[in-house]
Length: 390
Image (cartoon, rainbow, N blue to C red; front, side):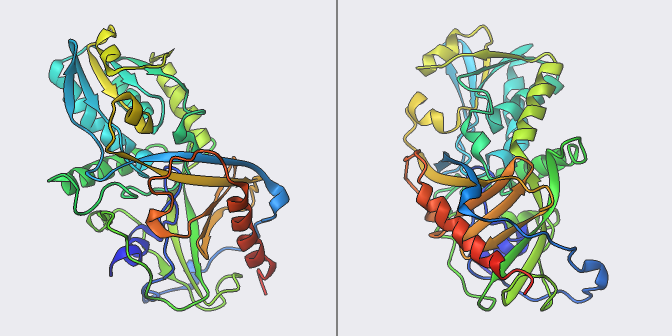
């Protein structure tokens, strides 16, 4: 099993990125495992009210992809040790805790009492929280809080190897580093399940196909590491005919880890402030300014902003657009159908057009919303639900 087929089987058919948009597939591998019982029967599913006039917002972000994988090295700027922690492609939220743990290990080589974190997105919030738990004084320096950062425009699914590297370009040993980050992150997210507002939760996700299983496009050269964490992630299941109200030939279901990003961002900011963390609104124009900070250990979590700030042209923008439908609390599942992904969150129903595979939006830095793209995606889902239950 290769390409998107393996990704569907291992990670449960994730069809969207944790950071903006994501993995696609036109196929549904395998068959139902033996032992499918009434206990596995899907619950009653509420229909999604997918209509253009329910689109209340359209957002775009640029994922910071690096062919070699994230930048996680260190350098000295002025008299400060700078630990770089950026360039995670579509895996920023998913790998944030593991990346923070590795960054903190490097920071502790200087035995600091205080550190600076640059950036208040997914990576910055996790780095600050991890350092505070280690007993350090932490100041986050940022141009925008998480609510305005590109991380806030993520779809909200666990996608730890989404555009994380190119297979042929990945740094030596990165597969092992990735696995460690993924396992640390998964374990940490376990601690946040069940909190008020459900910032982290599991939800069923249905992968729908009008055609037969098998086939599908390749992964277009992007690295795939999910096989190394098969013991962690839920398996997808091919459901029996007529087991769901979806009017399609084939249905697969999985239970997927999901981030309700806005709730999650508020949760982390509240936790950081409660632990004594400080936030300073500041924009940096040169890496030399890192060396002028009072903290002499700095974790650089500037995401796509590092392309300009660090002059790092190895960062390739990957455009992702989300259309937002009015929330429906009764819809407690997600859908992937005909290159359109749906993620139901407390702050809205995420709609993404994903035709074109992993290369959709690649090297595209156009950050202005294109309404027709989202409207066309809504039309696909509206047509699906016009036959729902029939």
